[in-house]
Length: 497
Image 1 (tube, rainbow, N blue to C red):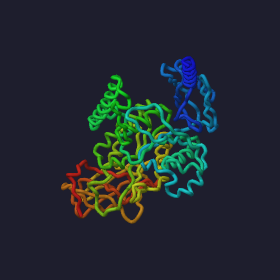
Image 2: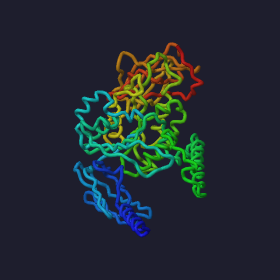
Image 3: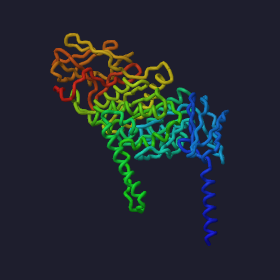
Image 4: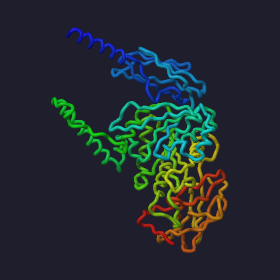
């Protein structure tokens, strides 16, 4: 009987050994994927330790030998864009073939619920879906996951865009990809990793959070907490305590700092991509004073993870939201968060921002994602792909005071125009820091503002509300970006009537 048990044990061990020797390539790699053109393309997976692995794609064949942990990685030389469905073949002890692989442009789409909102939930969804016959647009739909420390694997699959599948695509991402695909005439792949309702902190690594003065203490406390929990369990097990009775390691939560980064960002890298579109900030709206630091750190963190110091990063400025109020400005609103987004785009290289201040609704999830997606595409065409098109609405350039007039000049202001009979949402303050509604008129590429209650203008704000009325555009129908000329704190500002 004992010999039979030994034979069974050996047989099972041999089976386990054979299984572990199988070469494996996991998501984000998969059938129907899009590989990034004109860049080195890392490909990785697992096999038995010291196993030789060969990867073949197009006319390339590259080899690697797994390390002691059975991990392997190769790098394909830059590829030309191709809509030809080809197989990526990985050979070791066995062979794995990923079919229908295209080469084109790959973008990460991330953020919270407005990026997560599916095409089926957007404006004219049924009509748009019926026309969504774009088999060269693909999306990696990542399964949601979170972890207390970085993990290597992510689950998900690549979807081919069709009238039947597009309803599950990120709405913003799909309309961005559609416009980019039509313009560049190359395949477009989206890697979709948003999570509704979350602040930005879960999307940042612990190491990066520890480099931010406003977040270091929180990150240190988080690290200490988990280190102590793991150490207590390890010590108990080492002492022979029954695993069922040893101290448990608590479950993490998706809202924990770094939790989404660990399970949904880290395992994607370094899959070759062109850049990132980021639509988030609603959940950080109550803490705008730290958002510029946080978003700047997040961008740096992701660039480090991909070893792409110049990774293009496009921020979608928060849309208008809530019931419109008839006051010159609102002191506690998303205006400060939008300002933090704008300042991040102005101070971080290879970073841009598109404005959605005119497409929002009273609800937090505006349905017009077509306009937002197209604006991201315009930014990418101009700032990433070098096309000579306007991509931004008018942005504040300078203020000149002439008597009772405040004269505001703008960049991106060719064909400056107003939609409607007036220019609402401008406010002027004098030395007393009290803002009053201003009357405005367009003169060339400038707006001239006056207010009977302000004899000597000192500061101007525009669209400084949750839901401002927007009527100032350029010739390309892109809305003026909210701005302020002052740096006064909320406690130093008053609102006039």
